[in-house]
Structures are given as C-alpha cells and as structure tokens.
Length: 246
Ligand code: 13P
Image 1 (cartoon, protein in one colour):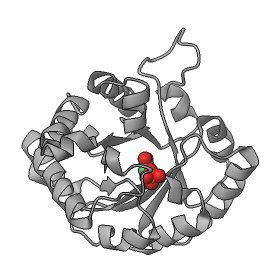
Image 2 (cartoon, rainbow, N blue to C red; image 1 turned 180 degrees about the horizontal axis):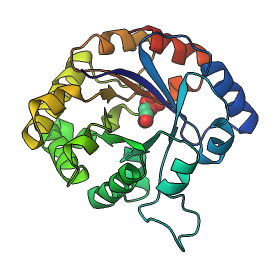
Image 3 (spheres, helix red, strand yellow; image 1 turned 90 degrees about the horizontal axis):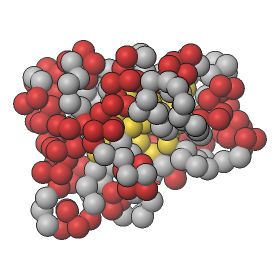
Image 4 (cartoon, rainbow, N blue to C red; image 1 turned 30 degrees about the vertical axis):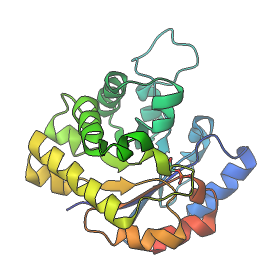
C-alpha cells in the first residue's frame, strides 16, 4: 500500500532565522497518518537534523559524484552522515536551469540509494509537449531513463513526484482528472518495468501550484498519494491546511 506524503520544497527561499522558525513550527504539526517531509536549503540541514520532531528532512540536490575535487558540491555520503532521509532529484528547475539529463539524474539516484537516502524522483512535461499530446511519452522516457538499473527494492525506497512544468509556480494547476490520469499512467509504466505490486506500493505525489484550495480534490484521487509543495509550503498555515486536506 502506498503511504500518504506531503513534502515541502522550500527552494532558494528563507534566510536562516525565517527557515528555523518555519521548521520548528512545522515540526509540531500533528497529523495522524501522513508523512511530512521538508526540503530546506542545504546549509540548514546540519542544524535542522538535530531538532527532533515529526518532520523528516530532505535535501534539494546532491552531487552525481561520489567524493573528491568537485568544488561546491554535496555528496550523498555527506547527506547520510546528517541523517537526511530524502533528496529531491530530477526537479524541472534542475533539468532546465542546470541542464540535468536523465543520465545524470540516474547517477544521483544510484548514489543516494547506495547511501540509504530515499530519492524523491520528479518528472513532468512542458506545456508545449502537453499541447502536442506528448505528455505520456515524455513521462515514460523520464521514468525509463531516470530509474534505469534500479532494483525492485531500490525503487520501493523512492517516492515519485509528478510535476507538470507548466503548473510550477504559475498558479495553473493540473485538474484533479489530469493528475489522476498521469499518476495512473506512471503506475502502468512502473508495472511494466517492474510489476503490479511494486507499482501499487509506490507513493506518487502531485506538484505544481498545489494549495489549500485544490489539495483536497487532488488528494481524493485514487492514485494521488500526496503533494510536493513549493510556494504554499513557505507558510505553516497553508502547509498545514494542505496536510489536513487528506
Ligand atoms: P509550486 O507549488 O510553487 O508551484 O512549486 C511546486 C514545486 O516545484 C515543488 O517542487
């Protein structure tokens, strides 16, 4: 059975005091059976990992190299040494602004899993491709190449996030039907690559202008197991309302 997850991707927002205050208040949210994850900027991870609470920590990025002379990079091993449990990989902002390819994303997934960190693997199509009716093909390719050579047990340690690029930070949300269609398609692809049981055990999150006014409708869909939230995760109230909308 896939579990319910709500993850906040803070992106490059919040100074130290703002981030600490938000982290502390999110850490006290009481929600029964929802896993809550927060991905602050990486420089805050060391400190936040010392605060116990109900929130799990994610990094927003990781190096595709193991260790060595890669100035400015952070390795999967380093994240593991801070007890970081998750790492976002394949986000469209990294794919487009930093030219991350499926192959590089796949290297990151393998390194994370070798270091006991669960990837939150993002996939999503741009508007032009949706308009041309190519969205399923694009997502299938991202899944096949991004998840290449992962064993079944490794895949079961991943979370998938479907984030249509045209919905990220734009205020345009995929309709609950569009999200359900794609999440069900993702499960079909995983089922073909692995098996039905693996596909139904995976948590698949929706991301892209998810907010309190639309989260309940999205989360009510059979194959939507939660959300990867950007803007609305930057305030405790809106993040909490989204968590409560299950
Ligand atoms: P918004 O919720 O701001 O659209 O961002 C979604 C996202 O990119 C989460 O990773």
